[in-house]
Image (cartoon, rainbow, N blue to C red):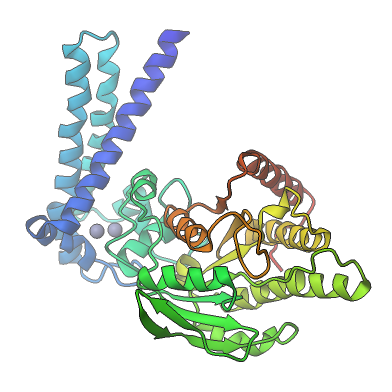
Length: 407
Ligand SMILES: [Zn+2]
Ligand SMILES: [Zn+2]
């Protein structure tokens, strides 16, 4: 039994190793001009719908990029084999699988280089043209994931098959040049998120319920931010602005603390739950093209109170309702929807919060760039354990008892 587990580990390990080699080779190509001269052929091949622009360039791209890439994988695939053989480890030959696996990529690249018709449909799944039928995948590179490397930011989304290297390097999501709107921007966390987004070269837009332009303090310099004033119940007025936004961060909220009268119930649910849902729905209406499907995202700050007490019953109830509705709606939403599960940070809403909003914002952006779909930032270890389980079982339950169509 132990032998079988060891052999499986050797086989999988050798494949993961050559995939890591592929991604490191790709990163090197984007950072070393000599190699980029060859890799650039790959970037010249396609238009934004993944149709090849020219047969000659298409064939050359495979000889100059894909063939050498697979050869590098084959050669580096022999390193673990040599080490295991040298150390006289039994079953060392199973580690050959990595090189053998790479050989298929070499044959595919040679066939495409020779211009054999339709061979690309069998050997190159990440560059097939046509409308995207799925969202950028979280663990295995698919068409929308790789599309972003070609047309969103060439200095990100390097992974070729497994997204591991992008996750480690924080290149699984690029914020550079993206237009990002944040609701609740006049709040402490809103300001902190806007700042860190700006430092990540995003174009920021503040959505605020207060009729006052947001000005950020960036290392002592004032930075006025485009501020859109809106109010709950009037979300539909934002549709034109939302169509220009790439990532919408729904972050606004109200905390009525110990109140429990009917007006507080109405206010809590209206602001914390239904307003967020309406914004999410409106934003989804703006998703039409392949680019929208690959690049548009919604992040919702549903808070840690989804799973643990917030010592403010109406805040807890309304945020929990928002969290549950996001779980329901994101099952087949046409864009990536991330949840922000945040612990108690110090703010106007929560003056006794323990965490610093700047630290929380930094962690949110760091985890988003690693493509975490549920971003948990808290000091409570129970949340890290309970939330993923709750989300998993609730998603499963919602999936069984709701129809497939999003609308
Ligand atoms: Zn490509
Ligand atoms: Zn590239």
